[in-house]
Image (cartoon, rainbow, N blue to C red; front, side, top):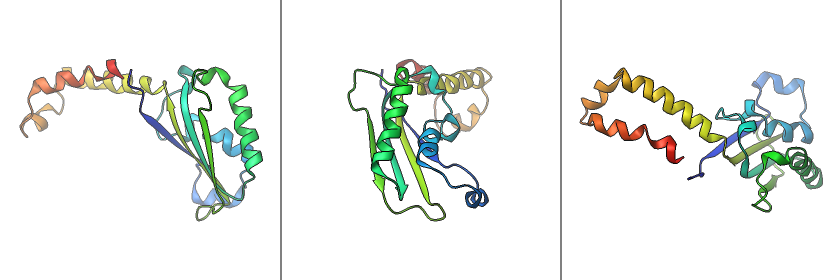
Length: 158
């Protein structure tokens, strides 16, 4: 399979007004990074395994504390990380926080759980294609209906 689809996340993912009520800590940020609710895509990570991931923390953060937290997450959630890729979690720090926050974290991950999202999109595509919904917009611009049938097979190689 071609598992080269990255998922991104951000923490703390709250409204601007809520930032002043709560100061995030390193353990909270690292926990939120791996939370599906903080991802920009919606796969459930419990149904897959991480191949690799990178985390970038911004603000006044101790590197030792970050490394300890990342090690804790990898230890507690070892079944969600592949064992055949050594050192598959990378961490970077930037001492300058983003505007309006004291600290934040960005997550970039490569997980096999992305396949469920592609399957869901493929299922929705199949339903719409069978009804020929919106197809006239594309055929009117010169696309052939047969071109859409090969799109339906894309999730098989993902």
